[in-house]
Length: 375
Image (tube, rainbow, N blue to C red; front, side, top):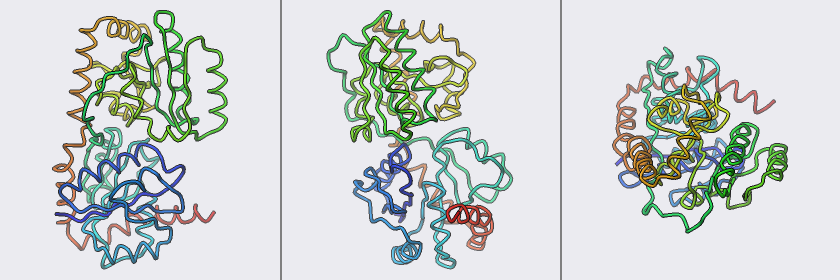
């Protein structure tokens, strides 16, 4: 049994994919290990604080230092770079545990200098390739483990409805604006053939984007629901009752766990793209994000395939099975105990003399972070 202390910072709204991912991964690993979570900073996260393995909130490095010395974990697993900065700022030298850092998606670093750890876990192929090609990380073990979604106990059928329900779960901010508006455009096109209900569920990050979204929705002729209150923190609860899910990152994978019709953003497509064998790997490379690119991006092709699946129950069943197959292969959290145990074991047997690398390789990033926080 390995003792693992997870660290994550409570920046922003304390919501989003990596908070949910940590909560689920911690629960799964607790079946064979001792797991605890510390939330860093002076913010809140309902997702983390409601986890049964949540230990406490800490906003001072001296308190974190005392907590780590008292707990003496085998592994400190940082779920963002700010939590790694907190950890290194404690100036624990001789008693510094082995450190694992998760890169939970997002763009690649802007230059070759990024944070360093005994082991780095990537959620996306894009990030994994970047670390593997970077010579600075030859002294760190790099792993690709995208699995972070629980399989539903029961794949619930949607309620009886004549409406075709389209769901978009997304933080409402400028970064996700293109997909929010292209989802509306797709719903408008489909409303020529079907009775559409569009649900957009998300926490508001940027009020100007929210106002633009509200204004855009006032011009549509189909039914819609914009959910931004506390229910938005649990956006995945709307997936079972949907037909089509436009997902990015975690919400995309959750939709696959239910065997839904899933669409992903693509930079070179007018509409979100129906994910199939033809484009799964190329969209997976960018973590099904706004940065995705696909060779098969013609809007007419997505509409043609969508209509076939919507109108033909056999095609729909085949698509649902394919979604579940992809989910079980790449995203099902039930497979992570063996994968993460190998990461932790490899980190634990690393030469203790290399501990100095953790500080020397992170010195530039640590100085930058401290200066930016003070500035």
